[in-house]
Image 1 (cartoon, rainbow, N blue to C red):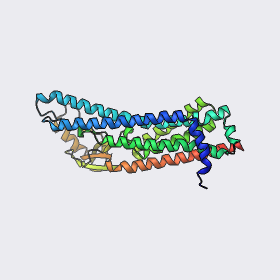
Image 2: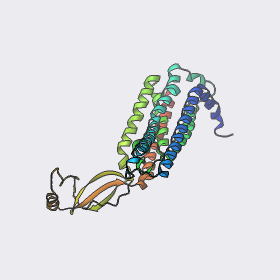
Image 3: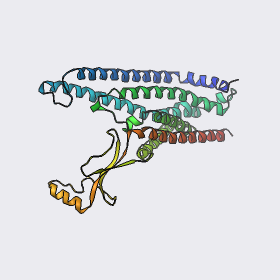
Image 4: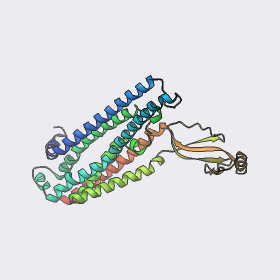
Length: 328
């Protein structure tokens, strides 16, 4: 007998109980994917049409192209804005997932007492909880993976001057595998909260707050999850830093390695001679840039995902212990 066989009955019950929610969520996900694909194809058409003409986005083509450049810039800005909103939806999804798992999925049954029916039908509390978590996990992981893939594909359709930066929170947080990690964290936090707080609305509120707090903390620490790369350049400002790098700090550097602000020798109205004298007095030899190059995307993704999976696993372990104590 397959190890999944005992779960089929309880899992089927969960699907039947929440089939309306699952159906609506599936339709919304499908609509979102179709909308993103449609916008991407439209943007590609706009780019191809513009590049086929004689106008240049730089504005050097003459006044005859002014209106066309304005229209093109507006279209690309709209596409960039839509991608940002789509990414933002994926980044807030774990909070919604956490609320759903904590409230309607678990706390409501504990509050109403309907869980006793399942536990008296040869379904152990452990099997009951596993079924409650396995159904949303399968559907949500599959859904966010598809949506993240569609969004990543759409982001490659932007024009050069209207790119979406990989390190922006709505972009980074909507990229797999991090988005999957946050989804699993939302499920785990929701389960634990639902078992601890037996009131539906209260459990939903607490789950959203906890998930949001963890998300905010990791976002604030994101830049430090992988060692920064420091590039030193000459005083003429030439720095060998990839264009798409995530710049965290920029300033002047002295011969002894001390770091100074970028405007330490530049003030409004200061002449070039005064600036040169200031730089000589302070022994400034060049510039420094602390940054994450584009190659750091996947190390940052994997480290953050690892933290999320560890937190999710911890929350699940605690949830099962709480359930055992409840049924002891």
